Structure formats: C-alpha cells, structure tokens
Length: 116
Image (spheres, rainbow, N blue to C red):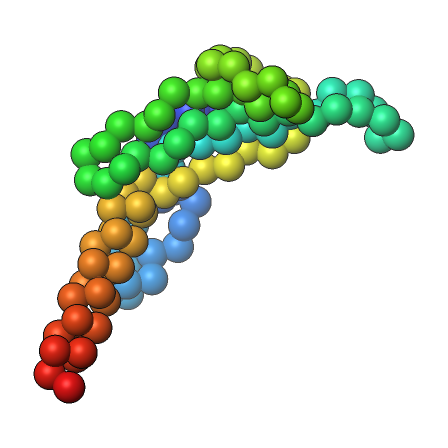
C-alpha cells in the first residue's frame, strides 16, 4: 500500500458542513510518523519512523528518524508502507493555528491580570 507523504488531501472524503453546500475546501495532511510491526500475532518487534512538526507558520519539518529500541538513526520511511502498522498524519497549518490561539489566550490573561 502506498500512502502520500505530504499534502494528502482528505477533502474528497469529507462532507461540507459550513454554508449548507458548495465545495469542501482543501484539507491537506502531512505524514509525521510510521509505526511498523515485524513478526506475527504471537511475537514481534515494533519500530517507529517519525519527524518533528514544523515550528510555526512556514516552518519546515525536522529530519526523519528511525526509533528502534535504544538506537535512533536518520532514515526516511519507504514509499511503500505495506509493513506499516499505523500511519500518523497531522493537518497542515494545525500547529501554527494552535500557537496563535495560545498567544491570544496568553495576551488576554495578561490584560486581565493588569486590569485587576
């Protein structure tokens, strides 16, 4: 099975809920982690390949790293994810939006504290 690494648009699979019709806007997701299982149901071994999220608007992902017990190396996951047990995607722009919301909440709390 091959799954897109960057820009996996889920819009075709979503129902448009805002505005009562029309086209669903793009909903891109980027792959951030692949968990692999080697073995069978009785015994096996898990590894994880992951990259850190962008550090804000326009930020770049960190390098891919393979976590295999205590050994961590830089390694890009294979394009063919047939051995993948779990794929983890992050919505593009999510971290930047969360950071902006946290900054607004902090500013509001500081203004409330200054007014008291």
